[in-house]
Each structure stands twice: as structure tokens, then as C-alpha cells.
Image 1: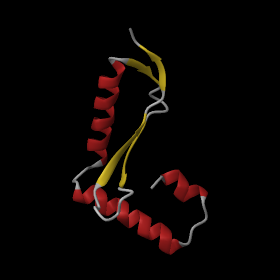
Image 2: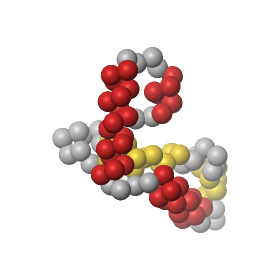
Image 3: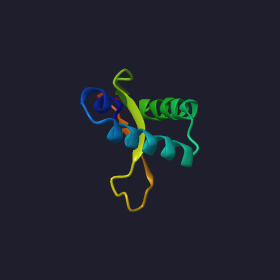
Image 4: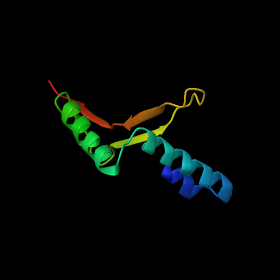
Length: 87
């Protein structure tokens, strides 16, 4: 679930509450705090920066529900804008 999607669309409060609860349950289930997500973000930036020049302002990391709800596994989503490859 994307926070911007929540803010940009007019959804009924039941749907919004359900999506927020899913995110809370996912982060609780995998024991991932905001600090841990930020540390993960910094580590990913460090590793990828060895090979590519990336746009850190556009870099986005999220933990979202799986598209396959039958498993219920969380998914790590990373949007990494690449500026250039390093040689």
C-alpha cells in the first residue's frame, strides 16, 4: 500500500482503516521498526552505490503486503532511480 495512494484517493474510512491495519500487522509480524527500515535503506544505498550512481532523493524502500494474499508474506519493495553505471 502506498501512502500517497491513501492521501490522493478518496476512499471510505473502512478501506483506509483496513489497509493501515494490514501495514501495522505486517511490520509487527516481521518486527521491523522505522529505524530498522531506515538502516536497511542506507545499507542498500551503500551496496548499490558501489556499482551505480543512483538518485538518493528518489530512492524509496517499503514493506508491503504480498500480492499473493494466500501466503501472507511481506514484500520488500525498492524503487531505485539509476543515474549512471560506474566502470
